[in-house]
Every structure is written in C-alpha cells, then in structure tokens.
Image (cartoon, rainbow over all chains, first blue to last red; front, side, top):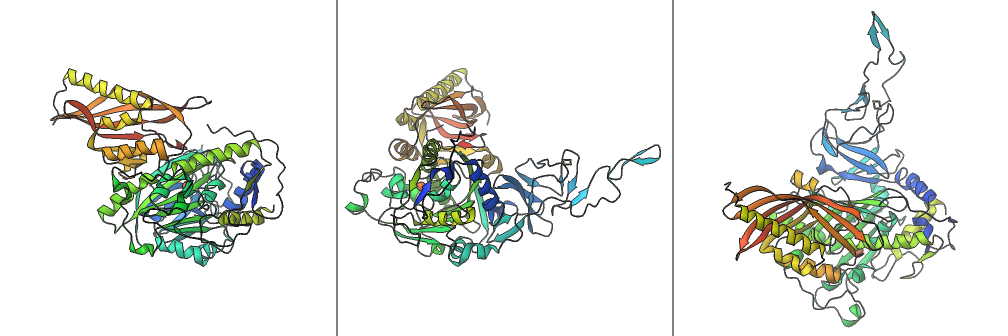
Length: 420
Length: 160
Ligand code: FES
Ligand SMILES: [Fe+2]
C-alpha cells in the first residue's frame, strides 16, 4: 500500500504573496519533501523522541525516529538521557533492531563494534590485527583513533519528562523554541508530575505529514466532522475557544471549554453530524471529571512543529508522534499516558475515553480518513490550491472556531524557511 | 480447574466462531453485540501493549451497551471510506475449561477490500476468548483481539 504515488510534473511556485492559498504541490512534490526533512527535521527544530517514563532505569533504551532517521533514546549510567543515531560508525548498519530493552552497551552484529550508552566507540574486534606465525597482521592502522568515532549523538532537551532531540547542535534552547505562550501550555500538562505509560497505537496514514499538523490547527472541522464533539459539546461552535501561537507561528494551541447543555439553533443548524437524539447506552465512555490542573480549559491541543501533537481532551492524554515516510505517507504513533499519582478510577476513565482517539477512535479515525481523501485530491492536480480564508487572510490569534488562522500562520513560517 | 471438553460443546463453540465471523463479514453490525454477555469485555489491542501489560487498547469496551454505542458510531457518526472485510479464523484451541467457562484462543487474519481496489491484509492477530453459557446459548464474556500488525492502515472502523 505504500508504493510512492505517481506525481504529475509540478511547477513549484507560490500563488501570490499571502498564505490564504496553499498549492497542492506542497503535499506531493518529492523535492519539496526532501527539503522539508533537511530544514525542519534535521536542522533548526526540536523533534519529539519519547517520554522519560519509557526508559526509567540505566541501560533502558527505546527506539524512535527523527524525520525518517532511526534513533535510540537511552538512559545512561548517570541517569541522563541520550539520543543516538541508530547507524553504526563502521559501515552504516542500523544495528539496533529491538523496539526497546536494556543494555550495558550496544554491539553492532555485523562486525561487533561496541559502543557504550553514551555512544562512544569502545571496542573494535581485531583492531590490532590477527596474530599469525608470531606476527600481527591486518587490523586498523596504528594511528587510528577510537576517540570521536562513536555514534552520532543528538542534542537533547528534557522538560517535564518529555524528551526532544535535534541533529543540530547550534539549536536554541527548547524553552526559546516554544516561546512563552506555548511553553506555558506545555508546562500545564508536564508540570513535574511523574508520568505513567498506558500504551501505544500505531497507524500509517496515506497523506502528507503536514496534513496532521493542519488537522490539529483547524478548529473549524471538529464541530462538523465529529458527531461526538458536536453532540456532546466537547468541541463545537458555541464552545469558548482561543487560538494561540508562538512568535514564529509554527506552534499552536487550540484551547476550548466544553459546552454543556443543548446547543442553540444556529450553532447546529445544517450541521448533519449533530444528532439531537443521540445518547450513549453506556455513558462511562464520557464520564468526564474535571481536573484541577486544567485551570479552566477542558481541551488543549498543542501542535509542536514539526513532529508532535500533545492532546489533552477532557481526561484523555496522548503524545502523537508524526513520522514522515515520503511525501504522501506518514506513520502516526500514539503514546497514551496518565500520571503516577492518578487513582485507579482516573486511569480507568482515561482508558475508556481513549475510545474517542487513535486509529479507531470516535473522533480520530475519521481525521485519518479525511487526510487520505485530501491527499487523493492533491495528487491529481498539484497546481490547484487550497482555499484558506476562514477568518480572513491574516494569521493573528483568534477566539472562534470559524478560523483557519493557525494553518495560515504555519504556512507563513513554512514559506520563510523553505524560501518559497 | 481443567475439566474435560465435551465434543458436543466443541461443535457448539465452532458454530459460535463461524457465526461471529459471518456476522462481522456481512456487515450485520446489529448482530455483533448479540454474541456478547451484558457485562462483556471487548478489546482490540496491539500485541506490544498486551505483552508488556500496558492497558491501552485501540478499542476497549466494557459492556454490551458500549458495543451497541460502537454500532451506532459505525453507522451514524464515524465518517469513513467504506470497505469490505473478510476474516479467516483458525480452529479455536481450548486453553482451559472451568465450571461452564471455556477459555480459547484462535488465530485470525482480516483482509480489507476498498471500492475499486485490490484486497490487502488488514489486521492479523489472535483472539483470546472467554465463553460462557447464557440461557442455553454460548456468548463471549470477553473477546480480546490481540493484533500482530504493527501498523493499522489508516483506520479500523468495523469490529474485528
Ligand atoms: S557495520 Fe557495524 S560493525 Fe561493521
Ligand atoms: Fe479531528
């Protein structure tokens, strides 16, 4: 199913000088995709790696990716976190094949070069040659230095138990990268409480990776596409909403307060997904209990450009990792979590509300589906354009759902970095 | 704990499996919750979570009511690309029999066919089941679908 789609010849050029039109080729053009990997994933940006709670003990490791590159997140002997590229310094074998585990060192199976948990090269078999007839033959040249020959080690940032990394060691601090507004919403969830991993979901979505960022920068669709959101007031036109961004407009927060009670007529008139008579036979799936740390909003959806979505939608929490695999496909890996000090009831609640999310979720399965449909449309006509005029042409912060300002903001940033 | 399995009961269990498969492949969604007890547990879960004792499931239902809610979702609320699904299910292996409870396991492979497309392998795994008798009929007290497939091809909408 992942055969590269045939892309018609495109003429990459941006229509006009605004961001209220986005040409379809940004989702299909292979050269554009390669440049995105170089400029967004491999330089200048912090990418999501995982949660510290996944590697609690020294020697614990878990594989992850930055863009298309395989990396290993590892807990070192001194309790720190390292992120190492999973490519052997000898001849490039992607040596670590397990998903996770515990190791004292990493040994490449091909010629057994050994690396410590910091990624330093510690051993090369027959480095000094092989003794034959009383003589040492072969081996590495006498002046060969192990120093500096280790695995590529990424720059790492850990905040509130969340691990980010970058191949770019000149990158600004993670805090500066998020900016004060987005950082405050990040800290709202990750305020130092210990996290508990609830489990994973993985899906492969046949669409361009940016479509998932856009989906969570699009407050216009949830109250239309997702019946559960409209009908149960989790996200709809009468919800108190605010749309915020960092100064670069690459990251965003969609903040909402759940509407309780029946919606007024104009909120749902013509909205076919609103089901006035819908009620749950088993309401435990929506047994929402407000938590103190929410500080008001019942949902905050954070998009951290380029690779992560942080979901707090009522009692359900997840990290959603965007893993691009070509212009027309990405993997979407969900890590649901709770807090160590949650009661059993709260954990059960988070698990049941997880039915709304993920590849089968009541409000998420259809997001993947519509992304696939969008990609189908784009591939047929790379020169056509998306129309992004809800809420005007600019990309200022807004306080209503009928706005595509966050997507426009993202493309303003995208255009600057991509030079188009 | 382990009691002998009566051949007639095994025949009945085979019938239960065959009817379940036929029902979900036919798209008879209303028929699906009827295979379960009122306080059943149904889980569709990645193998990694299952083996590591991580409780998250892709779908996690705790009652027949939740299954009926899912049916409503499939029919009325979940926007999706329509597809056919076709299960191939192995003979169930009996793990234990305990005072009117049968614990079984069976392999499954589900193929998906979208309109105008070739058929593809959709989801592969095994059922871990607990079957009981309710008013004479065999029902699933629990059905865990533990899947090997590392990636869900976009979405799973219909029951496995
Ligand atoms: S490629 Fe890894 S040791 Fe040779
Ligand atoms: Fe959505």
